[in-house]
Length: 269
Image (tube, rainbow, N blue to C red; front, side, top):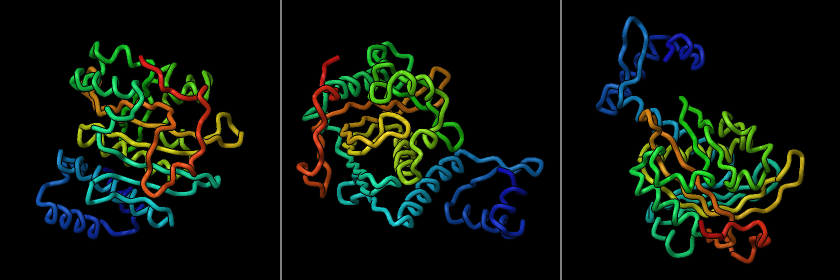
């Protein structure tokens, strides 16, 4: 939204940049910017288009990295698989929401029903019982900022209380570190937020439990739910349950290390 900064970043002239904006608006058929006293502001359509463009750029950068990730356009379900910067495998497979009631841990089943009953409002009493297990994120400009960490959440119990307290106020990029992984996660979060919907993923990753430690294999199901803060600002609920019950396209279940029972989150709430 700063014309001079955009010109410098892109290495183009002001005339070229203005022409590109005009061309984009003609192609989209909507006005993307309002200009007041030489200052650019996104219109509602511009804000929506910016999120869509960010998702497209994330996919392009991911592809150029030589990693693997795609959406199955027949079923509309996302899939990602790659080796991270530390040599660990990462697999993610989106599943239809009705799969929740087939083989998801009770925590996710109850979380989904509570979210639906809450009418997407974070301050609704239906979500109170589940909040100790949730991570809650707020979208601040282009970053996802963690504003709440449940003390019984999967990540808090994986990393411990030190991580739980220090994670508040950090961005998704700061937490994940690996750029490819961050692009996958933030892109997925943005899609759920834009569509005001919910999403179920089965995930296998290798994540250290302490800084500098060797990564440990972890399997989990993740439920993402778009929500609203009391002031109407959009947010995202992340509810994760560690489980050995995951299914990922193209991956033999026998090749995924099983987690010990002590680390599983198959309990009822």
